[in-house]
Length: 501
Image (tube, rainbow, N blue to C red; front, side, top):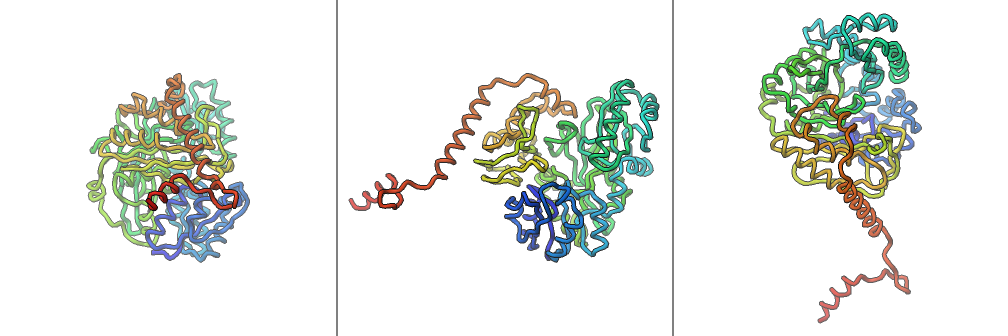
């Protein structure tokens, strides 16, 4: 196992990796930008190294500064977390060239699966079903129109080098396609420095279900299990659960074996996720592969009992997977749910809400896990993704996991900024969510509906105000007497009188 690992990320995922390192006896070093000097991951780490100003392009995305920090720390490996450089093959190549282990797949696997057009061709060759569409980059809007006529509208224009909903446009008619093409190309160039686009058939209200896979350097590849990720806003996941309420044991095996076939075709090792779109008939199609640890990995950990970050570290150190495929499936217990808590205002079109957290009460109790990157007094910066924590609950079944999430959301209080906590309280009461009737359009439907009665929201606002007043009261200095000594409390005075009686 490694002696020291550099965590090249920030926020809750950096804290998550630090915890795994500490439990394994590994020294955890981190990097930080100027605005993150007092961030939670810096406070939790054993060592911390500055990498530049607040903008990510000048700090967390600077491979040269990350590598310099790794050498200064004398780290044997780098864990990139997710986001930033996690799927950048240039970092993987730099590690290979400079004798540092990247806790992730090879540069070759990243390059293959990072290009949506190349990965689609590779998956077709491996016999993996893909969403109907083109496998080559589009040269012009006219070429896109010709392919769209063959597929039939609606279609999706997508960035070949992207993800997270960027460089993506839904096109319902031929008249809308030229403008959508130009907008998607400009966004793809800006976000990924790659203007290549391709076209896919738009499936009617599909589910988005992904399969966690894991491979080692000894040729072993297994699937860990699926996650339901259909609750999305602007093509970005906001709620995930494991297992999917739609997937039965037979379908899980078919999806899992297909995901393993995809991973083998890419020569893949370490943690990865194969994402599928699933139509109403249960047919699934390869969408993309994420060559990193996923944000939503905790729901899989809660159900399987595996620590995926520790497993990443072990595989990167050259160890073989410590279990077989059947052992993984036999270890499944219950169901888990995750809500991504963002510093956003759900009442103002989810506008970012940076600012100082003046009071914070995290939920707890049986089956509750809160992975957080913030603390009371921390100022949430505007420069980065607004994800501040992840709330995860486990139950013996889906119903219990949902009830625990409801209870945990009621306990969760963050004062000083707006968060998406009130929105999740609303979502968990929606009949279709409770029935497991999910698709990628459900969230838009919920947001378009009129809000519920304000009574509950007013009560929650009152509770938040009470929490803030309580925190402010107990943060004051104690009152003093005329002689300058702290004023004795009435409780203490009465206690002393009892002793003298």
